Image (cartoon, rainbow over all chains, first blue to last red; front, side, top):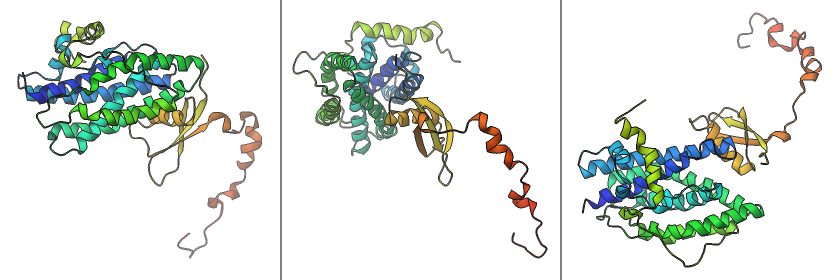
Length: 246
Length: 93
């Protein structure tokens, strides 16, 4: 198989790219213009990190693929994002809960990566840049989680549905990965992630489901049927007009 | 849909200057108003500090009272320092 760090960075970069695309779908669709701007800002942060990660992954691979080649010219089986990122947005509650789970994961990973010894230098520098943005994504989603979970009967019901639906997908985030000793193994993040997410859910009067199935496959390219449709929208312009700019 | 309350936003552009009104926004409460203000008004590094104030907490002068409030100041030139001649030999005024 290929260089472990290439696979590792592709997984991180694809998480960001697919999250950016999903959040971008909210533009002009949120309940207030202020929230449109907030979600679009977060989407752009994610896209910025995706570009840095995919560019670097392409350099490590050494096959001449740049960020555009990796973003626009891979098919769904070649994507390495977690399933959580590609699931449809659902209602605002689903979007917020997904962002909470994902940004708690990214925030922890970037923090540990930026501070650890022996991590690949450029990956650590990317993490150091992304961690401040990620802390804000976590804050934004946590603020909304508390307000909606501990809000009206209807908002609580929707948030409970979202937590029940999305919690199973968080197992995949902590699969052990080969890092070649130059990155943090996500398997080591689970305890820290729980100690971030559980207090937010508790304050929001929400409880994670116990047991049940834990879908996985994204890290090996086995995705839900939703990713293909997302990629069709993401890639169609570039595939019809290769190298198009404006 | 219930509209979220309106907040007035004040941003201090840098240390040493005072907060200046920059606009308004909607948010469900003060904490979210601060975060929305960060997204709407400081994303291009416009400030180092933000205040948000509930719009209904501000008492404003009414346009109808404009004459009574502001016109009397117009003909009182002696309220400006330039009204007074500076005596010769007073160097540091």
